[in-house]
Amino acid sequence: MGIEVDVMPPTAAHRILVAMNVVILVITHNVQATNQRMMEKYEKKELNTTPKSNSESDLTLPSETFSEGIEISGPVTDIVDGDTLDINDIRIRLALVNTPEVGEAGFVPAKEFVEGLCLDKNGQVDIDDGQRQGSFGREIGVVYCDGINLNSELMKKGYALISAEFCEVSEFSAEPWAKSSCQM
Image (cartoon, rainbow, N blue to C red; front, side, top):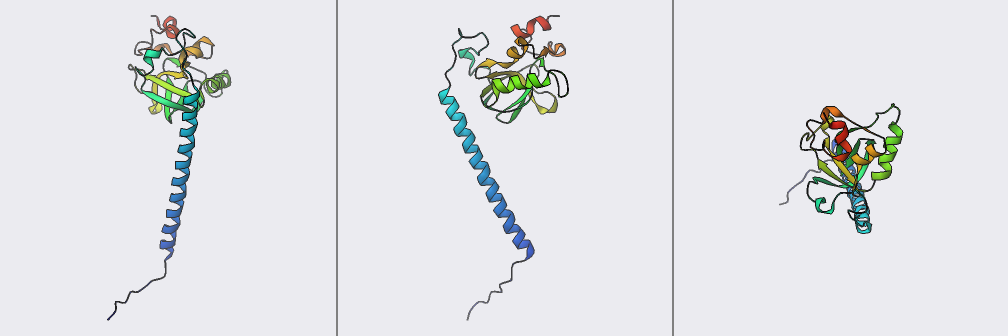
């Protein structure tokens, strides 16, 4: 006495499900491989980076602050424009500074400056407690690229202006790079 099993030929829907599973496995493998390469690249840069002392530049993040106040840290993965970038795939809008938008004079030099200073380097963000999130869900803060204060550098080099309408709410309005424009 045996049990008869009716074996049905695979249907088109079954073939589609199998194909979709294969595609998902391939995508998962590619994402894991990409993440591994990014981590290896980031770790290699971390090992080859020596922190600057406070005496080397007044624009570097003080050593005692490297963990204090820093809420986001990781590789700078994309530069959107002169005042917006991605760190660990989190979109960051620089506090108080405003650079030209696409199509405006100065857009390309500002963006290229930020790319040169920050892209593929270690980024750290001190989120602005006065304005936690801005438009488009972006975090707002002061960004340090390999310890250099990007907000300050953009002002110093003339690529940005202070957005004075945010001076009253920003915790950074008293910083040397913003202070003269934020005095009311």
